[in-house]
Length: 221
Image (tube, rainbow, N blue to C red; front, side, top):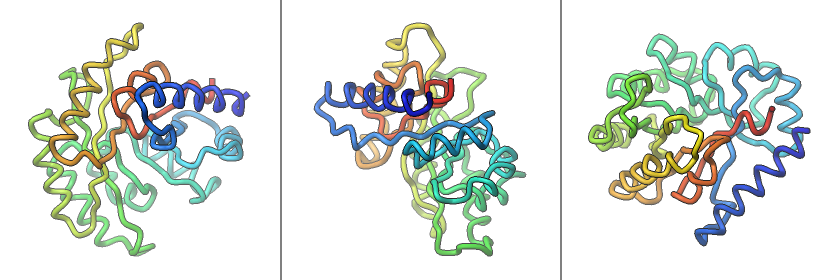
């Protein structure tokens, strides 16, 4: 079932990319494994998933010993500062950077990391484009400041920007959110990644320039 689901997702990504003249290879699939047992994650890896996203540090701590580092680990959920030291040991990419304090804490923690000192930490600035009070992320007008702080750190790498659109039955309602993030990114550096789009709205995200889509339900349903 997972292999069939992945094939369908890849077809959806490819169709959306080609509709805008984009190369589908420019869109990376992040398999979201929140609540997914290790056995099913291994099945997804066997079917070609090379990047997985976890929402919680604690869940990654439980799963990583069984799965290993043959895949790239992405933290896509909110990161509390008291979990920063654990996060820099576990993850290759953090999508949820939303404050200067968190940038500084991550930079310090990477500098103190005893294992794999050559392995850098890639960060994406999470932007609360929709302005929903329940969502994490910086305000759009704060994103440039956070990006500059990451660029100044010798221990961190700015990879791009992330956002979450409000959940809605109509995927088209996400388009203005994704478009605003793309325009924000383009005003800073058009070569940076855009992490946006999930199972229900991935086509709209790809059409608006997503380079990473975070897919869980459509893979593991």
